[in-house]
Amino acid sequence: MAMVDTFNWPETTAPAAVWTASAPERPAPAAAGMPVESHPLGRWPPGFRLSVVMPVFNERRTIDEIVARVLALDVPKQLLIVDDGSSDGTREQLAAWGRHADVRVILHANNQGKGAALRTGLAAADGTVIAIQDADLEYDPAQLLSLVEPIILGEADVVFGSRFLHGRPPGQLRRHRWANALLTGLSNWLTGLSLTDMETGHKLFRREAIAGLTIEQDRFGVEPELTAKLARRGCRVLELPITYVGRNFAQGKKIRFRDALDAVGCIVRYGWLARRQ
Image 1 (cartoon, rainbow, N blue to C red):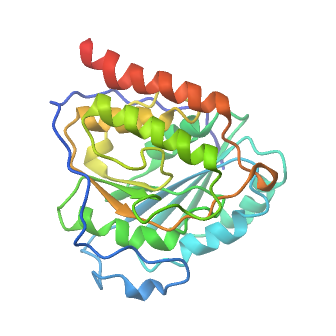
Image 2 (image 1 turned 120 degrees about the vertical axis):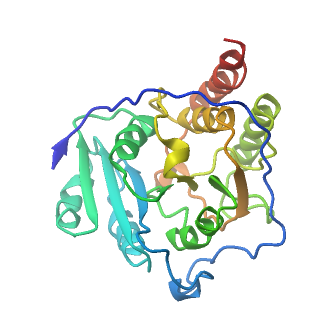
């Protein structure tokens, strides 16, 4: 297993463009518990592979189940697990998964944050499409099979899975819902997008759409950073509804109030200041 700190790619520039972010005629993605054989494409294009990047920090209670769910997906895949300095026994559990043919486990020597883990995982991903999947069971990986469809069909470069297109998700704290609405609205204002869930943990990218993109943020500021930088590249984005089951702090939720403040700063930095440079 490799000991990795960070990777940095040179950033490329692209003209700004207006994104569209709705597809009401498309059926909702597979809900939790639906068989993966229900994927509407039926088969995958020749040479297709889905790279799933999974940042992990102290998820001993959920890591085995979430990894098993990803590996059960009926799609050619590469699972890149980046353990960001876990100290609760998670990385010991990952040792067994690292022997699986479809799994690569990368270890950070110490905790750096979700953005740092994504920087490492995205640098190692080589699939046709790259997806982000959290390790805490709030997001069902079975939904990735439907979220990837518009990218394969050439309808989008980026797909965000929205927790709010079908109303309030169960288990989400009210203050988190309000904070997400505020942050998404501010992000939309500065990027020209029409998203409902900028902070979603289910983001998928055509490999070329994210190639060369430098992730600067080490913590949760990576969400507005990615959104703004992809918007500046003129990528086509699509937002589709997903199911979501939130957890509370006692169950291991890690995002805090300071992260919301950091997100505001990142939205202004990458959505407005970068545009003026």
